[in-house]
Length: 220
Image 1 (tube, one colour):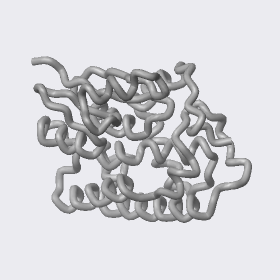
Image 2 (cartoon, rainbow, N blue to C red):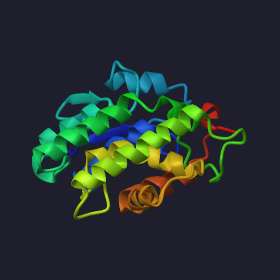
Image 3 (cartoon, rainbow, N blue to C red):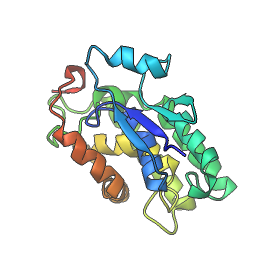
């Protein structure tokens, strides 16, 4: 059977692409990766050949296209149930899905002010971190702490073992590091766990080699 193909954008910038990549890679689901580079004239044409949404990421599997990071993760969890993409217990899964949905639709202040850019030197924004972003960071720290206290035994991630919730928050972890945003010791330990995974290190290594610049994602 042919492997699923995950279509992504630039690894340096594409936070939405990083999420399903982390979920699949950390779960041990075999897949192939195809990149369609942002800014290329062919980007729109190429991505619309496989998804009318015209956006990355897209998972191609068994003649079907699944788009949107969270939809891809849910599809993967159903297709490969033995891989443990979501936590085992019903209570943990409910909290994990709530946390994943919150980052999927929220934290706009942080995401707007601090776009994912793995190449950027680790330093604060020149004008300082906006209050809306700092409010989001405070919520992140509280949420992550709640998840860890409730279900974090047995590992360094939000629900102990790595899960889809960690995959959804991986791009935010990079933002906190890239923009040198002060966080507590518990938050920093969680960040180090995510950034230290082999899956993330491989993604970042590729992203740092990319020569292309997307101006709107180059915050100061």
